[in-house]
Amino acid sequence: MEQLLIRGGIPLRGRVQVNGSKNACLPIIAATLLTNESTIVEGVPDLLDVRTMISVLKGLGASVDYQPERGLLRITPGDLPQTALPADLAGRMRASFLVLGPLLARKKEVQLPLPGGCAIGSRPVDLHLKGLAAMGACFNIAKGSVEGISGGLQGARIYLDFPSVGATENIIMAATLARGTTILENAATEPEIVDLANCLNSMGAQIVGAGTSRIRIEGVPQLGGTRHVVIPDRIEAGTLLLAGVITGGDVVVEHVLPDHLKSLLAKLTEAGAVVEEAGPSAVRAAAGDRITAVDLKTMPYPGFSTDLQPQFMALLALAEGTSMVIETVFENRFRHVEGLNSMGAQIKVEGRHAIVQGRPSLTGAPVAAPDLRGAAALLLAALAAEGETKLYGVHHLWRGHSRLEERLGSLGARIEFVSEEPEQALNIGSHSG
Ligand code: UD1
Image (cartoon, rainbow, N blue to C red; front, side, top):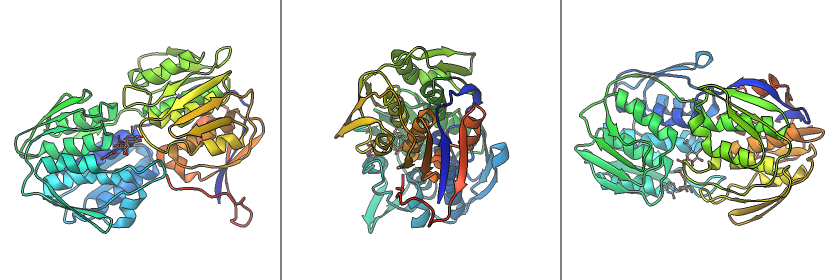
């Protein structure tokens, strides 16, 4: 059983590079299906999720050349002989559903397994389907899979009931090749949407307004290949900054866009950390005198990201006073609480609210990662805890972070990767994320 052995209590100090954004990369990889030409994507992080997305594209008949050590990906979709995705691939990662829009737009038919429930809530796809149906697609849902056809998509006015990131991405991608104009209202405004739109525009699309809640897309007859560098990963940057603060250290993250970190930096400052921009693409965070309790509510961008809530909760578990954390984006994103509590945290969950009573210290313990961001939260808690933590379910971490242990090690962390025989391993379950 694979695990990380973390010896806590060492203040992390130094400078560390942030990788390209996972959540920008995945839709951009899907978007390359909109042309038969080659697209080169640079700054691609070496992650399990990226590799899954590559397998999805290969499954559809695209030719892919991936050089993980250089962060370089060349995708040539060609004619895309396949429009049906096998269940095992789609089941591994919800983001595989992002091929829906591109396939419908380019091939006029698609068959995908529904992503279904997952560990952080039901995560339906109704908004994706409603948006594409408004553009003339017809869907048939049976036996856990969705079949879509279109006689050629038509631009439409679409209002999203909720600014879903994935639905915004699927609709934008489909609209680039639709006839006429699509206007998407209450769209998600995340930086990853802007990066996708920039990539699509460099492929010949006509998208304006990405990054605002109203996006206008003029359909074009075809797109061509391009070369695109993905934006830095704001969630990884935040996780590394929090690693510095939670351990009482001082960390500078490099290769970041400080604007994307505003909500996190505001909360860190409110909690008493010292935060400053350390150049045009670097940010520093240090622990300051003491960390005090703050209330936190997750919101769509530019609000506080749900993807940093578990990691920030780990910090609040060690703050002076009682904090309230409200999760508004996902219905079940407190699965890291069990692990934090077994390290001595005092956190009570009631529905979408968590009440965190700060403790002076945490103690290392065997814990199981429940999902990707939950794994990062437990890792941060372990770095700050007294004694040794065994973190199981390490694959969750690898879904979103490349060589994180190594990079934290360069800041002084003592983390060892261990692969135990199953009979030696503690009986702790891990869950899919
Ligand atoms: C993306 C991110 C994920 C992040 C999330 C919210 C990627 C690969 N993943 O996920 O890391 O946590 O945004 O910032 O970019 N919903 C519906 N119907 C739909 C679609 C979504 O009800 O058709 C609901 C979901 O159940 C959830 C909420 O909307 O409660 C947010 O989901 P969404 O913004 O779509 O997240 P993802 O795109 O799946």
